[in-house]
Amino acid sequence: MTQADAILDVMKAWIGEEEPPVTCEVDKGMMMKIPWAVDDPNPLWRDEQYARQTRYGGIIAAPYFVEFLRFRGLSSYERPAAPVSFVPLPGNPANVVGGEEVEYFQPIRPGDVITISRKTTDVKKRWSKKLNREVVIQTYEQVFTNQFGELVATHKSTNVKT
Amino acid sequence: MEPTQVYWDDVEVGQEIPSLVKRPTHIQMLMWGAAVDDYNPMHADREIATRAGYHEPIVFGPLVFSFLEQMLTDWMGVAGWLKKITVRHNDPAFAGDDVICRGKISDKYEKDGEHYVELQIQADYPSGEQGTVGSAIVALPLKAHAPTLPSAEPIPTSPWLRIAALGKPVEPEV
Image 1 (tube, chains in turn orange, purple):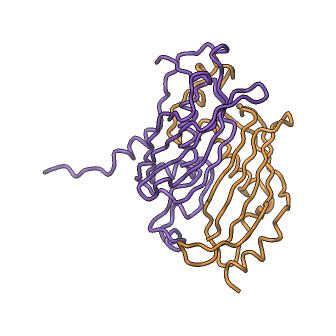
Image 2: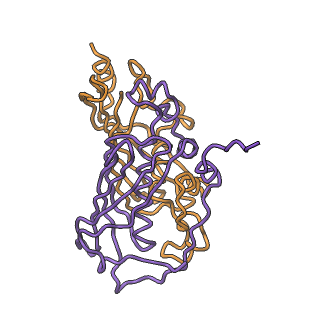
Image 3: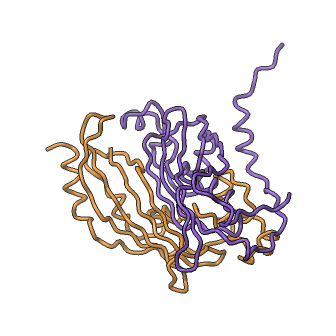
């Protein structure tokens, strides 16, 4: 059995399993820290005085704030048990993001309470030309809703277990 | 700074939007990793990166993705809305690379009363021509519904990134 087969054996059970959702209260500091790290000077993300004069009436999160929420949904510091994504896999493979698809439906504002749910949608083997061996590809989907029950964003990603 | 806004009426298929050049450093990778709580060793540990087939830690794909979004939001202005974005990371970038983000309008249409443009987007860097490729859908306002635009000043960015961009301290001549 190759390492990819062994990984696939463990991960197959995850397909379609809805993980326990994580809830995140968004504060301004969190929202501002992400464009700070991206080095993005857009005032809509960080200048309250400017943002008040726009149609949003205040600062909103940069679209890539979803990346922060995504990892918030993966991290275990708020959970009683490690999420399935951090269950050790055979051979302890590294993970590389191969692709992402995000849809945005509502702006995120300070004080929003975002619920993040996540499920693995597919797991399969693929031949890696770079590594000259099989790797496992996991696709999963995360859904973000706010305190009003509105859909805020969806995020689908492809992850390579090398 | 004079506020600017792009309108659906004015854009044409085939038109390129202003490109954006970013240069992620190891310091920026630290900042991003800490900000989003991503401590994947692929981005910090040479040995693990080597085992996965790279010569050194790779830049976070989601950071390159964020650069592409920065290009789009810079261009679409405060009255635009990024509706959807899809990217595929073909090759990773490495710290110190120039990451050149580009976008070109590939379609323009009206749907359910909204006015959309579709763009082909890509990020090129030394280790990967079209290292990251994808598409985006952006809703733009019509000129007839032009909003009042507040004057916009880019706000200061991190001094840590400016320091990192200067590179290593130079030994003073004795």
